[in-house]
Amino acid sequence: MKYYDKLVQEIIRANFHFKLWRRLEDCKVEYIHELRQANAFWVFTMQAHFDAALMHLFKVLDTHPDALSIRKFLNFVDSNSRIFSTMAFEQRQTAKGTDKELCRYQVARHCPICHQHIKEDEAKLNRLETPINNLAEWRDKVYAHIDRTALLKGTGLDITHPVPITDMDNIIVTTKEILNRYSQAFDASRWVVEMDCEEAEIKAIMEAVRFKRQELRARRSTV
Image 1 (cartoon, rainbow, N blue to C red):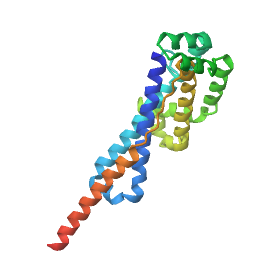
Image 2 (tube, rainbow, N blue to C red):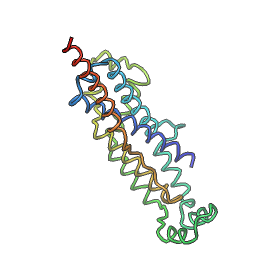
Image 3 (cartoon, rainbow, N blue to C red):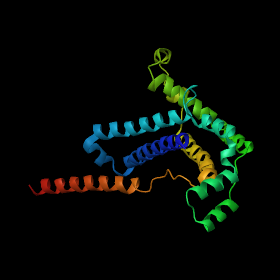
Protein backbone atom coordinates (compact mmCIF):
# COMPACT_ATOMS: atom_id res chain seq x y z
CA MET A 1 0.00 0.00 0.00
CA LYS A 2 2.91 2.36 0.67
CA TYR A 3 4.29 1.66 -2.81
CA TYR A 4 0.89 2.12 -4.38
CA ASP A 5 -0.11 5.25 -2.45
CA LYS A 6 3.18 7.00 -3.22
CA LEU A 7 2.92 6.37 -6.95
CA VAL A 8 -0.73 7.42 -7.08
CA GLN A 9 0.03 10.66 -5.25
CA GLU A 10 2.73 11.47 -7.80
CA ILE A 11 0.33 10.83 -10.68
CA ILE A 12 -2.40 12.93 -9.05
CA ARG A 13 0.04 15.82 -8.61
CA ALA A 14 1.36 15.45 -12.15
CA ASN A 15 -2.18 15.52 -13.52
CA PHE A 16 -3.13 18.48 -11.29
CA HIS A 17 -0.27 20.67 -12.50
CA PHE A 18 -0.57 19.49 -16.09
CA LYS A 19 -4.29 20.29 -16.30
CA LEU A 20 -3.80 23.69 -14.66
CA TRP A 21 -1.06 24.51 -17.16
CA ARG A 22 -3.31 23.50 -20.07
CA ARG A 23 -6.23 25.56 -18.76
CA LEU A 24 -4.02 28.61 -18.37
CA GLU A 25 -2.55 28.12 -21.84
CA ASP A 26 -6.09 27.95 -23.23
CA CYS A 27 -6.79 31.31 -21.60
CA LYS A 28 -4.41 32.93 -24.09
CA VAL A 29 -7.19 32.74 -26.67
CA GLU A 30 -10.07 34.34 -24.77
CA TYR A 31 -8.31 36.19 -21.95
CA ILE A 32 -5.04 37.41 -23.43
CA HIS A 33 -5.67 41.01 -22.28
CA GLU A 34 -6.44 39.81 -18.76
CA LEU A 35 -3.24 37.75 -18.64
CA ARG A 36 -1.24 40.78 -19.74
CA GLN A 37 -2.37 42.68 -16.67
CA ALA A 38 0.24 40.64 -14.78
CA ASN A 39 2.31 39.17 -17.58
CA ALA A 40 5.36 38.16 -15.54
CA PHE A 41 3.20 36.52 -12.86
CA TRP A 42 1.25 34.37 -15.33
CA VAL A 43 4.30 33.43 -17.42
CA PHE A 44 6.15 32.14 -14.37
CA THR A 45 3.01 30.53 -12.93
CA MET A 46 2.39 28.57 -16.12
CA GLN A 47 6.02 27.51 -16.35
CA ALA A 48 5.97 26.42 -12.70
CA HIS A 49 2.92 24.20 -13.28
CA PHE A 50 4.47 22.65 -16.39
CA ASP A 51 7.78 22.01 -14.61
CA ALA A 52 5.98 20.49 -11.61
CA ALA A 53 4.00 18.15 -13.87
CA LEU A 54 7.23 16.93 -15.46
CA MET A 55 8.97 16.48 -12.10
CA HIS A 56 6.19 14.27 -10.75
CA LEU A 57 6.13 12.19 -13.96
CA PHE A 58 9.92 11.78 -13.74
CA LYS A 59 9.47 10.10 -10.35
CA VAL A 60 6.82 7.66 -11.57
CA LEU A 61 8.91 6.66 -14.61
CA ASP A 62 12.36 6.71 -12.95
CA THR A 63 14.80 3.95 -13.95
CA HIS A 64 17.31 4.44 -11.12
CA PRO A 65 18.04 1.08 -9.41
CA ASP A 66 17.04 2.38 -5.97
CA ALA A 67 13.98 4.35 -7.08
CA LEU A 68 10.38 3.25 -6.77
CA SER A 69 8.77 3.50 -10.19
CA ILE A 70 5.76 2.12 -12.04
CA ARG A 71 7.90 -0.69 -13.47
CA LYS A 72 9.36 -1.54 -10.05
CA PHE A 73 5.80 -1.69 -8.74
CA LEU A 74 4.85 -4.17 -11.49
CA ASN A 75 7.88 -6.30 -10.57
CA PHE A 76 6.75 -6.26 -6.94
CA VAL A 77 3.22 -7.32 -7.89
CA ASP A 78 4.56 -10.10 -10.11
CA SER A 79 6.68 -11.43 -7.23
CA ASN A 80 3.82 -11.15 -4.71
CA SER A 81 0.79 -12.05 -6.80
CA ARG A 82 -0.57 -14.21 -3.96
CA ILE A 83 -1.70 -11.09 -2.08
CA PHE A 84 -3.94 -10.30 -5.07
CA SER A 85 -5.65 -13.71 -5.05
CA THR A 86 -9.39 -13.97 -4.47
CA MET A 87 -8.79 -15.77 -1.15
CA ALA A 88 -6.48 -13.03 0.13
CA PHE A 89 -8.93 -10.39 -1.11
CA GLU A 90 -11.83 -12.02 0.78
CA GLN A 91 -9.76 -12.28 3.96
CA ARG A 92 -8.92 -8.56 3.83
CA GLN A 93 -12.52 -7.57 3.20
CA THR A 94 -13.72 -9.73 6.09
CA ALA A 95 -10.99 -8.44 8.41
CA LYS A 96 -11.96 -4.81 7.86
CA GLY A 97 -15.63 -5.53 8.57
CA THR A 98 -17.13 -5.29 5.10
CA ASP A 99 -20.85 -6.10 5.04
CA LYS A 100 -21.29 -9.83 4.32
CA GLU A 101 -23.63 -9.27 1.39
CA LEU A 102 -21.30 -6.71 -0.14
CA CYS A 103 -18.31 -8.97 0.52
CA ARG A 104 -19.96 -11.87 -1.34
CA TYR A 105 -20.79 -9.52 -4.22
CA GLN A 106 -17.19 -8.28 -4.43
CA VAL A 107 -15.66 -11.74 -4.13
CA ALA A 108 -17.89 -13.08 -6.92
CA ARG A 109 -16.61 -10.35 -9.24
CA HIS A 110 -13.01 -10.32 -8.07
CA CYS A 111 -10.34 -10.72 -10.75
CA PRO A 112 -7.13 -12.17 -9.26
CA ILE A 113 -3.84 -10.91 -10.67
CA CYS A 114 -1.74 -13.24 -12.77
CA HIS A 115 1.51 -12.93 -14.72
CA GLN A 116 -0.40 -12.17 -17.92
CA HIS A 117 -1.82 -8.99 -16.36
CA ILE A 118 1.72 -7.81 -15.61
CA LYS A 119 2.80 -8.49 -19.20
CA GLU A 120 -0.20 -6.54 -20.52
CA ASP A 121 0.66 -3.51 -18.41
CA GLU A 122 4.33 -3.70 -19.30
CA ALA A 123 3.25 -3.71 -22.96
CA LYS A 124 1.24 -0.52 -22.36
CA LEU A 125 4.37 1.16 -21.00
CA ASN A 126 6.46 -0.19 -23.88
CA ARG A 127 4.12 1.47 -26.36
CA LEU A 128 4.99 4.77 -24.67
CA GLU A 129 8.72 4.04 -24.75
CA THR A 130 9.64 6.97 -27.04
CA PRO A 131 7.93 9.76 -25.04
CA ILE A 132 9.10 8.18 -21.77
CA ASN A 133 12.70 8.13 -23.03
CA ASN A 134 12.31 11.71 -24.21
CA LEU A 135 11.13 12.71 -20.75
CA ALA A 136 14.25 11.07 -19.31
CA GLU A 137 16.37 13.21 -21.63
CA TRP A 138 14.62 16.35 -20.35
CA ARG A 139 15.22 15.28 -16.76
CA ASP A 140 18.89 14.45 -17.29
CA LYS A 141 19.87 17.34 -19.57
CA VAL A 142 17.64 20.20 -18.45
CA TYR A 143 16.08 19.67 -15.03
CA ALA A 144 18.79 17.71 -13.16
CA HIS A 145 21.71 19.63 -14.64
CA ILE A 146 22.79 21.70 -17.66
CA ASP A 147 24.11 19.39 -20.34
CA ARG A 148 27.19 21.04 -21.89
CA THR A 149 27.04 19.09 -25.16
CA ALA A 150 23.41 19.93 -25.78
CA LEU A 151 24.09 23.55 -24.85
CA LEU A 152 27.01 23.92 -27.26
CA LYS A 153 25.14 22.26 -30.11
CA GLY A 154 22.43 24.85 -29.70
CA THR A 155 19.66 22.42 -30.60
CA GLY A 156 16.87 22.42 -28.05
CA LEU A 157 15.38 19.21 -26.68
CA ASP A 158 11.99 20.41 -27.85
CA ILE A 159 13.33 19.63 -31.34
CA THR A 160 15.46 16.53 -30.72
CA HIS A 161 13.35 14.94 -27.96
CA PRO A 162 9.83 16.41 -28.13
CA VAL A 163 7.14 15.37 -25.66
CA PRO A 164 3.81 16.45 -27.16
CA ILE A 165 0.88 17.30 -24.91
CA THR A 166 -0.97 14.19 -26.07
CA ASP A 167 1.97 12.00 -25.00
CA MET A 168 2.03 13.52 -21.50
CA ASP A 169 -1.70 12.97 -21.28
CA ASN A 170 -1.33 9.34 -22.41
CA ILE A 171 1.40 8.67 -19.84
CA ILE A 172 -0.76 10.03 -17.01
CA VAL A 173 -3.85 8.09 -18.14
CA THR A 174 -1.91 4.85 -18.73
CA THR A 175 -0.13 4.87 -15.37
CA LYS A 176 -3.41 5.67 -13.62
CA GLU A 177 -5.19 2.76 -15.33
CA ILE A 178 -2.35 0.37 -14.50
CA LEU A 179 -2.36 1.24 -10.80
CA ASN A 180 -6.15 1.09 -10.60
CA ARG A 181 -6.12 -2.49 -11.86
CA TYR A 182 -4.13 -3.58 -8.80
CA SER A 183 -6.04 -1.39 -6.38
CA GLN A 184 -9.25 -2.99 -7.61
CA ALA A 185 -7.77 -6.46 -7.10
CA PHE A 186 -6.33 -5.61 -3.69
CA ASP A 187 -9.25 -3.93 -1.93
CA ALA A 188 -11.93 -3.08 -4.54
CA SER A 189 -10.97 0.60 -4.69
CA ARG A 190 -10.08 2.94 -7.52
CA TRP A 191 -8.44 6.37 -7.64
CA VAL A 192 -9.71 9.31 -9.64
CA VAL A 193 -7.00 11.76 -10.72
CA GLU A 194 -9.16 14.05 -12.84
CA MET A 195 -10.13 17.52 -11.64
CA ASP A 196 -13.58 18.97 -12.30
CA CYS A 197 -13.15 22.38 -10.72
CA GLU A 198 -10.03 23.93 -12.25
CA GLU A 199 -11.70 25.25 -15.43
CA ALA A 200 -14.47 27.07 -13.53
CA GLU A 201 -12.02 28.45 -10.97
CA ILE A 202 -9.61 29.80 -13.58
CA LYS A 203 -12.49 31.27 -15.55
CA ALA A 204 -13.74 33.01 -12.40
CA ILE A 205 -10.31 34.60 -11.88
CA MET A 206 -10.11 35.75 -15.49
CA GLU A 207 -13.64 37.15 -15.39
CA ALA A 208 -12.80 39.06 -12.20
CA VAL A 209 -9.75 40.61 -13.88
CA ARG A 210 -11.87 41.44 -16.94
CA PHE A 211 -14.52 43.08 -14.76
CA LYS A 212 -11.86 45.22 -13.06
CA ARG A 213 -10.37 46.23 -16.43
CA GLN A 214 -13.76 47.26 -17.72
CA GLU A 215 -14.47 49.18 -14.53
CA LEU A 216 -11.19 51.11 -14.81
CA ARG A 217 -11.80 51.87 -18.47
CA ALA A 218 -15.27 53.14 -17.64
CA ARG A 219 -13.83 55.47 -14.97
CA ARG A 220 -11.24 56.86 -17.36
CA SER A 221 -13.84 57.54 -20.01
CA THR A 222 -15.89 59.66 -17.60
CA VAL A 223 -12.93 61.76 -16.47
